[in-house]
Amino acid sequence: MPVWAARFGLADSRKLFRMNSLEFIKRAGKGKPQPVYVLHGDEHFLKRQVLAVLRAWVLGPEDQGFGTANHPGDKAAWAAVRDELETLPFLSPRRLVVVDNADPFVSRERARLEKYVAQPAATGVLVLDVQTWLPQTKLAKLLPDGGLIVCKTPAAQSLPGWCMEWCLAHHGKALAAPAARHLVDLVGADMGLLDQEMAKLA
Image (cartoon, rainbow, N blue to C red; front, side):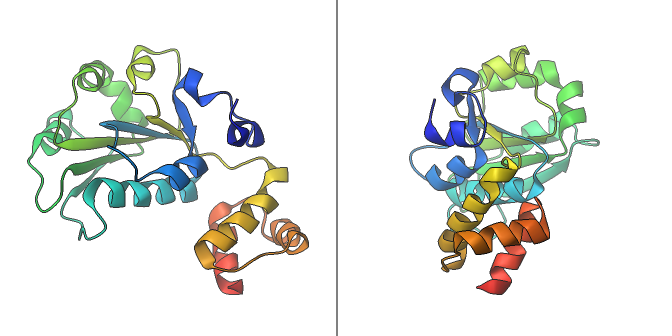
């Protein structure tokens, strides 16, 4: 089991075709993106960070938003999503199509998604933002290795260590271990609020 998986209480990502979001943020940007990603979990801060990394990776750092399309999961129509994925990109190598709160979309369009994951478009990258993802389904088993990114808050005992690493990497300041523990005690497990407080400290 990888060190990061053991640290955050996750099973071996190679067996379950999933990756911890923090590891993805560190590693993304090398090679070619997958055609489909599923962001699974309830930590919205991590989902925003993963999406930011994906945008830069898929569209390039100079993209002005022309290559991204967002669809709400409760209203998204498969035809519209598929058209976006098959539309030739403008000023970027690919298009990024995100279905937000995609649980109802996945439930409605599961059969079409299974066919799409098996034969994805070459012009787009599909991102499904979900709360629930069942690994035993056909759709989950078809997902490419590394396509499932787990966006869940780390265990409480791991948060001070995350604060120290995140503060140094993203705010350019070293945070001592006692200060990190005190920050978590004061703010709690909300990673977005922790990031905001680290930004203030920096």
